[in-house]
Length: 162
Image (tube, rainbow, N blue to C red; front, side, top):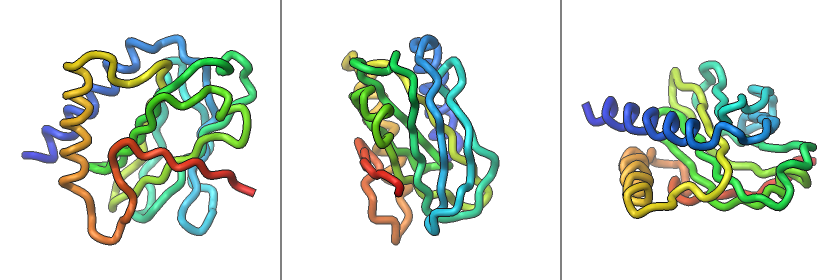
């Protein structure tokens, strides 16, 4: 039952975030498995969202990049999730997407996909939104699996691929 409420809460949050930021420019999304093998390649939709097909269990790197100059000078927030695992990057400079890109790690469980959302501006602007994000992060942290050593809240891994 706890899993159902967490999934519904994350889904509702992503829908609200998508509606509030419908004008986000598209960004390329590339997902690599732990060995560096390409697992997904696509782009965010007009609402900033994306989703992969179901993936094999394991650790993945989600890379965001773009050549769209409209991203320059603005800040963006990114949420990626797989099952109960969620990673948030807040206030990412748009210039980073134009350079080497922005990469984030997420663990995928059996039968799960990766969903995500890119939105303009910081994620939590009001006390209510901050509490909502914090509660979702706490629930995701509670579900943290042993052996995955990356923090699930406010994590932004800046990686460049050769």
